[in-house]
Amino acid sequence: MKNILSAAFILCCATQIMSGCATAPVSMPSRPPGIPGTYHRVLKGQTLWRISKMYGVDLEELATLNRITDATKIEEGQLIFIPNRKEPIRSMAQATPQEDFSWPLRGRVIAAFGTTYNGMVNKGINIEARFASDVLASRSGTVVFAGNSFGAYGNTVIIDHGDGFATVYARNAELLVQPGQRVSRGQPIAKAGSGAGRDKGTYLHFEIRRNHVAQNPYFYLP
Image (cartoon, rainbow, N blue to C red):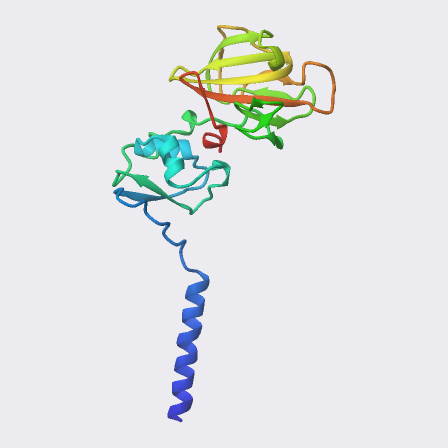
């Protein structure tokens, strides 16, 4: 009888251990050697940019230390190493969604940031679009350019967001805004198109610039 009870007890323990393994929390990523810091668990809807603002750390450093090349692949529950911080310097409420960038339109990304074509480096991303679909302001700001003066960019809108950031929307069929106009995030500013008719290659070329330097949009978009 004792042997039966012992076997049952061992089986029960083994079952609990196996069950615990199945629901184990995400393992802690390796800490970069010699760098103090803490870990942040990604919440639903958070972008790498919002996390960097919460902790007051440089976005590029955050991406490099965590070996993140495509920030669209950070997931809810993922642990991000935050260098030289013990806790956020801003609350979640202070890191408001109004500060975030949003997608100017939804579509398949057909050319990523930094890719080359005919010797030219892509300074943004190319998003496949239906001809004449709405292009939306990614963030609130003031239109500083709306016209066609950039060669292959075609009909272009540039919005200054007032904090060193600007966004560029190129290859449009029609522009809906004028320089000096104040726009809100999500407001239609153009109609998508190549600027050369209804060709199969219709897409939006989208850039995020910080202090006039092109950034990887993936780090900022949700």
